[in-house]
Image 1 (cartoon, one colour):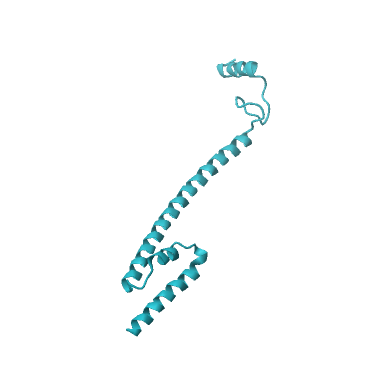
Image 2 (image 1 turned 60 degrees about the horizontal axis):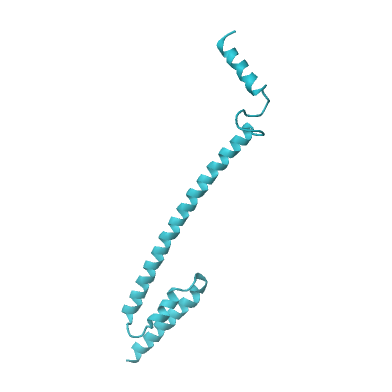
Length: 122
């Protein structure tokens, strides 16, 4: 007998005979398929967490851009007619939700039209 056969016999004496489809030293009921599925699940979870981080970063960047745009709009409106714009109502309009965008846009247009009428009357 060679050394490899002796090692195989010793292993079989300690752990028992081979059972098709099962994996030794992983516990009862573990198969190659279940190990492969677990590896795939871990890989998918890693990809998902990376996507979530990327989306959160994009959302943060978009929020920063939106805040900058709000500041620019506020400055532009103040410079176009500094006396006729109520800053509190402007901030309320800029802080409105996306669903209120049409009403906020209408309010800004109403303010601008009112300011133009005042300018025309002078």
